Amino acid sequence: MDIPKTISTRVVIAGGGPAGMVCGFLLARAGIDVIVLEKHKDFFRDFRGDTVHPATLTAIHELGLLEEFRKIPHQELQDVAAEIEGVEYKAGDFRHLPGLAKFIALMPQWDFLNFLAEKAKVFPHFHLMMEAKAADLIEADGNVTGLIAETQDGALRIDADLVIGADGRHSTIREKAGFSPKDIGAPIDVLWLRLPRKQSDPEAVLGRVSAGLLFVMIDRGDYWQCAFVVPKGGFDKIKQNGIEAFRKRLAKAAGFAANRADAIESFDDVSLLTVTVDRLPQWAKPGLLCIGDSAHAMSPVGGVGINLAVQDAIATANLLWQPLANGKPVLADLNAVQARREFPVKVTQAVQVAIQNRIIAPALESAVPLKPPFVLKLLAAFPILRVIPAYAVGVGVRPEHIHSPDRTSA
Image (tube, rainbow, N blue to C red; front, side, top):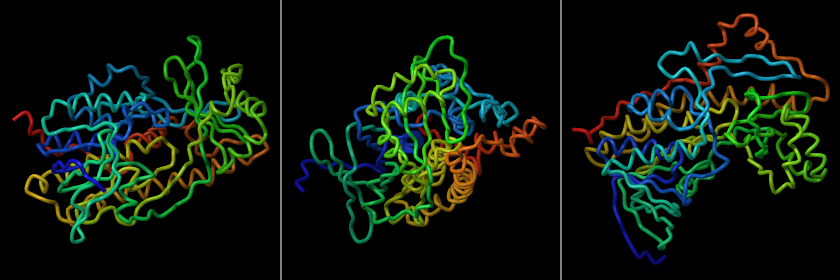
């Protein structure tokens, strides 16, 4: 390959999602020269999650940015509810969580990423390259020493002391590193679509469940972003049955928005998100570390994928800023990130898989009206217990706090 240009940096991060942007932000804030590569020309993508959880909001507060963050248009959920066969059940109450952030913020991810990018630009060590995609790794004597990026101006060689793969569940970095994830399994897929929103619409519950149907509506101001959960591979059968049959199913699932199913004119208005749950047995090799979805793809259950990715990024900055300040991190430094984050990932994935397999999949296969799980009846009888699922979803296992320094204000 003809390489027209070579640049160097301390850290190059492949992927401008939550893990990559937060990690780049924190390392640059700590005085480490960082380049973040984002393969698209902007952050606008419908298929990214909208939930910013209390653990992430706490980190934003620790950076002194929560007040500004809350000025961005968003909704704040203090309760999580599910509607089963037309009856609403409160599943979580965030009001009693520790800390300032006692809610989930519903915000399009592109707004979150644009906010981080804008704030990171003040750091002289932060460099964001749009329309730049990691294509290959550079290795010498068993060490990763950089990567090759595809840019608008052609191929670019970036030499670095550390390459961080944060390029998602279809990671080029982990593939080029020879890493193979362990597939844990997901019996569901998600169809992503939009329905018009009216000013008079009520606030949508988190999920609407009935026999054979699971539907989620997210308020995006002038429209509802909707997730229609189907059995794994079920979209092919849906398309075979035709768009009119799908509209009828959609109307049944959409509740108050049932009369807007005609907004789906064809299957071109429906996008398939293939759900994957996996994780790498090994996250690092000399000179390279994978975090976020590159290291562990999460189920959409609980919407915790963004939070886990951000927690990875915080831990990475906490553990690696000093080794990077002193030179090139050794493999033991990189493995410390996996040692710190693997347990929360395993526990969270185990819970997600149990919910997928024992609750969601049977509900999608059922032809008879569903009965609410015992746990929802218990939460209805004892409302104080709703803080437990709220903590599990909003804070999670081993939440991270920012310990990397701000060396830009010194």
